[in-house]
Length: 277
Image 1 (cartoon, rainbow, N blue to C red):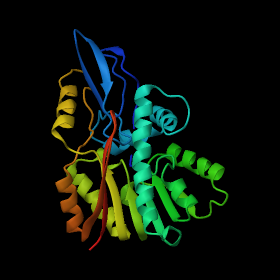
Image 2 (cartoon, rainbow, N blue to C red; image 1 turned 45 degrees about the horizontal axis):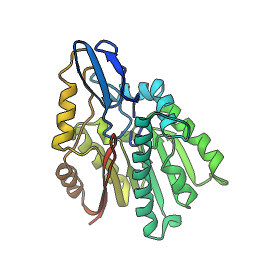
Image 3 (tube, helix red, strand yellow; image 1 turned 120 degrees about the vertical axis):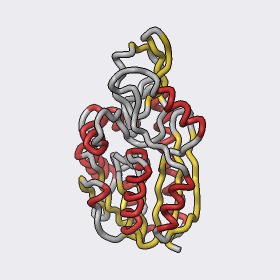
Image 4 (cartoon, helix red, strand yellow; image 1 turned 90 degrees about the vertical axis):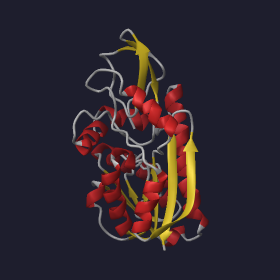
């Protein structure tokens, strides 16, 4: 789920009727007379259309079904459309930023890392390859299985990486570094705060998280999607204010060390590295 943290059915611009909107991660629709031109705005993360109050159940079911195949393709190396390619590039930029951060300390082979919402292992596997001891988990059984298979193909020795199917709330243990990318988009601020607090309790030294930034422009685009009728007229793609996230981290005894921003045409991710004060 997390990538990741935790996206949807992505297609290039195309003509659709108002009653045939596919379920996707964060789709904004506009048009007239029942015929709309679809453009996709991905705020990061693997988030399907939420037509029920149980966000977690919807996400889990989506990424064990149609969402899995689509996001495995986006995170892979095969041919994709232009929008998917843009998302692939943005996602990889976020991964590269985080890997660069953790490598700069020069102690990667000596630390333990929790990758919460690991998806297909886009971050977990390179970290294990660099020598870190990695505990990776995701809410989707299919994502975890795919990550495990990729690890076997890529790593000569996969003994320093483990994969498990878990919700963020059930992750236990203590880790030098906890990383949660592209997952907070699944939660409103109240729940995101609880998730961050739990992840912070697992981190002995550092917590790295990413989230969909709350900006005026992105908020306007999301509101446009809410104007159209239909059972899946909008998504629960939660954007968060950076100030709110920092306040939560500071309340848990962390201070911001570094920040990063990934911004492509269809992918937006704010990255924060917080260390224990």
